[in-house]
Image 1 (cartoon, one colour):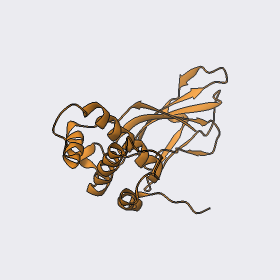
Image 2 (cartoon, one colour):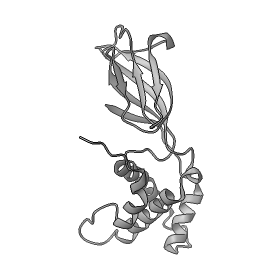
Image 3 (cartoon, rainbow, N blue to C red):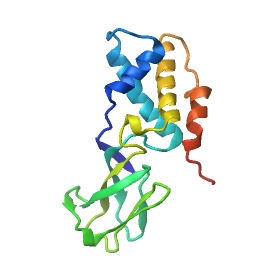
Length: 182
């Protein structure tokens, strides 16, 4: 699986204002690095839980075979288009009659090509994310992201890497963590 984020989620100024309030910062001098810390917490949340927090347009490249292919990103809100990718790398759009899609209640997205045609791979474009915007996230998730960004800001000059996320953040995020039995 190879994922590309076509249209990333944007953090509103209210997210930065929440972080600055948590840190007790009143000036705009540190806005850029604080905004970067907040953006990185979105990635850390996804790495920890297996769930993309904010809606974004994405594309995953999957093998083209007649069985079901499951997208790695969750939760999938909509599968919008599929392109076939030939062995030489050229792309061509697949009409809606050439594939089937399935959105599961668990947030999974699947695609199936009953007849793979000339494609050796398929590029699937979709929208995924737990919430459409920052304010739509559950309070515990937002609070965990603010706490993690604040922790990173405070620890920016200390030596050594502490385990991330800190226990206080992991406790807030754990209910959303996807687990698989092996």
